[in-house]
Amino acid sequence: MAEYWSTLDVDLHLAVDPASGRRVGLEQALREAIRDGRLAAGTRLPSTRTLAAELGLARGTVSAAYDQLVAEGHLVAVRGSGTHVADLGSRVGAPLRPSAAGAASAAEPAGSERPWTQPLGLNLRPGSPDLSFFPRAAWLRAARRALNAAPNNAFGYGDPRGRIELRQALAEYLGRARGVRTDPERIVIVSGAVQGLALLAQVLGGAVAMENPYIPLFHEVVRTHGAEVVPLPVDEDGARVDLLSRRAFDGVDTVVVTPSHQYPIGSTLHPARRQALVEWAREGRRLVVEDDYDGEFRYDRQPVGALQGMAPDRTVYLGTASKTLGPGIRLAWMALPEHLVGPLTEAKRHADHQTESLGQLTLAEFIASHDYDRQVRAARLRYRRRRDLLAERLHPRAGRPAAGFALGGIAAGLHALVRLEPAGMTEAEVLRRAAESDLDLEGLGDLWHTSPTNTHASSAARPQGIVVGFGSPTEAAYPRALDALVRTLSWR
Image (cartoon, rainbow, N blue to C red; front, side):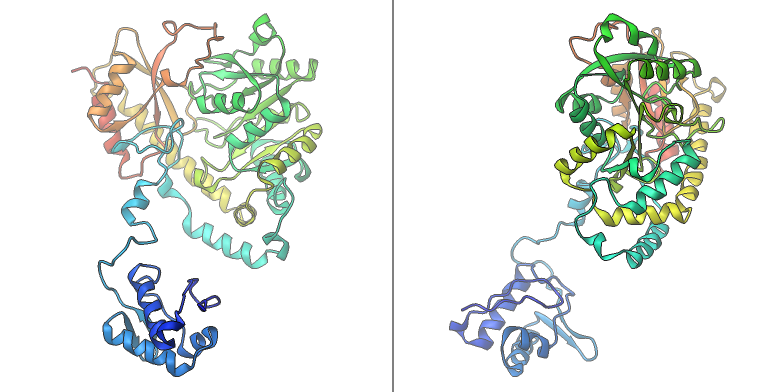
């Protein structure tokens, strides 16, 4: 009967064939584990005493097996350091762990629509911050403090709304920094804006007005989870909330807006439209979903407070760590009106029961220690400089032929819209020239609502433009990416 290696320092299934004899069987099992990569080079093996006890063998049997494998070169024994697996170079069989090259190719680069595809060499696609700016040291300190202080129940099943520690930290931070009026009992932690919108669509159903242009994935998520999407046009003053009273929006009881910084146009919702939207929601007992994806990043003035503060009983506030820290954190939050807490909590429980706890505890500690504030302030300075440099390089004074485009939107966020004038290059031509320069951009044309029911604007009437994500590149790559952008937009 085979014996099993079950409680050692390394987690490895080891079968010893007694038909070959105990020592020979152990040698064969270890040799096979080394050759097929289950025991990687450098792995420290347990002591002969420990392994003998685990497998029910005599200690001398294990010592003899170790000695034989050392003699063969499979193992290395160093006095005081124990016995380790030798580096045999190329081994028989495929490695169990991915190579560095494979890991790199599987990384998720920036991009608002297809984040899993590999970008070109110079990446100015929107949708991501500079991932090299992630605060590794501060996050590690917060994780250690959080783990040391974590109660035992943090490792078990918990409240679908999320850890109370994070909900308390967010209630304080959002009230202080974004003017959100909420409490920990009305916050639900989700894995991202996509999950938040999916849960809302499941609970609310019906017809949902969503900005146009906007992120196509968000439109798809809402439709896929049971709601009809009605496109709501956007202009330089934000969403056209005046249209909500028209026949085309009959039956719409929910609207999703980005009032602080519209994606991708870059406008902010005009104060008069904010007030009109709140009145629309209150009059019909309707709902506003506020996507505040990068509300902390305003560069020309103090950030505009969240719309939720004007009508917390009629507004769902949706925030995320994806732009301040990184999308890989997979943490976002919804501050809900009281009447939605129960239904959204139940929908979250049915979706995945709960978001993982250790990341929540780490973020809670990161916020409570004010490391989050420091990260946001540092990022705000960095991205403000990047947008200023973008505006400077595209200004006529920079020596570039001044024709064919204009920088639009407010000085905020991690992206800017380059509007293409009718007399200049087309969007398709700009994207083609960018690809020739190994430059990855996103066209405005990919972000329009494409449902056949959309009658607000024909394709011909839609403005053309390029959405530049100045948050995505590293500090070293950004100047080269801007050089490529200027060449792309310049006349031949």
